[in-house]
Length: 145
Image (cartoon, rainbow, N blue to C red):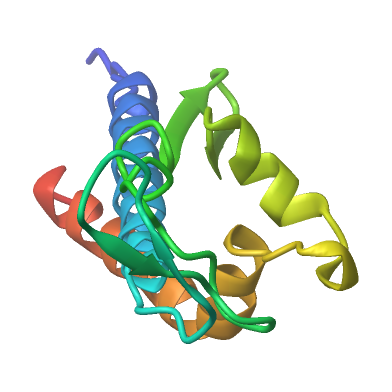
C-alpha cells in the first residue's frame, strides 16, 4: 500500500496573494472616489475670474477642501493610487503628482494649507476600511475561497 501527499499550498498562497491585491485595489479606489468627490465640492471663499476666459470660480474658504479651478487636482494625475506587492505583503498608497497638491496637504492652514488626503481618510475612516473589507470578501469569493 502506498500513501502519497499532494500539497495545495502553492495554489492557495497564490490565490490569497491575488485576492489581497484585488482587495487593496478596490479599497484604495474607493478612497480615491471619496477624495475626488470632496475636491469637487463648491467653495464658499472669494470669487475670481479665470484668466483669459469669461468664467469665474469660487475659491475655498479656510477649513474647506481645496477649490478645483481647472480640475487638475481632481483629475487622474491629481489623485493617484498605486498597489504594490512584494511577495509577502500588499501596500496601497494614494497621492498626487500635482506639485501644489503636496503644498496644500502639508502647508499649515494658517498659511493657506488645505489638507485634503488626510482629511478624507480621517473623516471617512470607517467607510474606507469597510471598502477594503468588502473588496477582500469579493476577491476571496472570486478565487473560490
